[in-house]
Image (cartoon, rainbow, N blue to C red; front, side):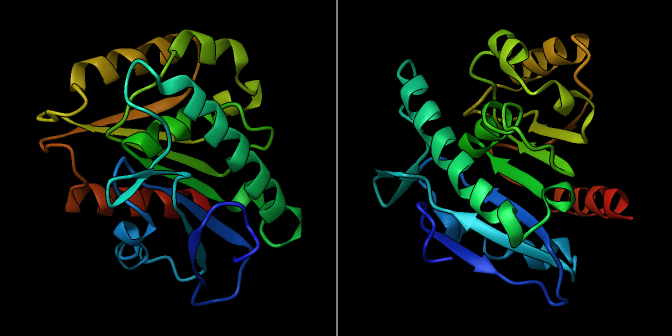
Length: 208
């Protein structure tokens, strides 16, 4: 996908399909950090596109600046994601059979961008992140997304983004009618093997 405005790694499906999983990494990481994910998820007819965030951050990339300067980067990254996904969903892939996956900063973009995006995807997976402004999100979001398939996971031992803060933010969304499944894992700021197995089964159930 060389023509897109975000650098990326594209991993084609083993069986031809118009299903797509969009993967957003965390701060300081890159698309390279998630190239093993397709093997773990084990979905033969899923294509994968792993994006690099637009801002350089040490040896990797970042979607937005550190607190309290997040908003300009969130807005800029969201505009880029809107542009590239609109292009991908124009004729190459089906939005209603596609998934948005984000870890850490990518998890925040899954909420802040994904819930505002004008197309509703098959599923949204937010791992070990937080929401910039959950009340503003409820005001701005695509209301059709409220009833989409959402999965949010977080580690109880996370020393980067506190578990309780993220859980409380998700509860605000849930109480407003946002249908989100929240799962906790005994892990730090990482992705657990059992968690990946659960995510794979969750996606396969949606695709049935």
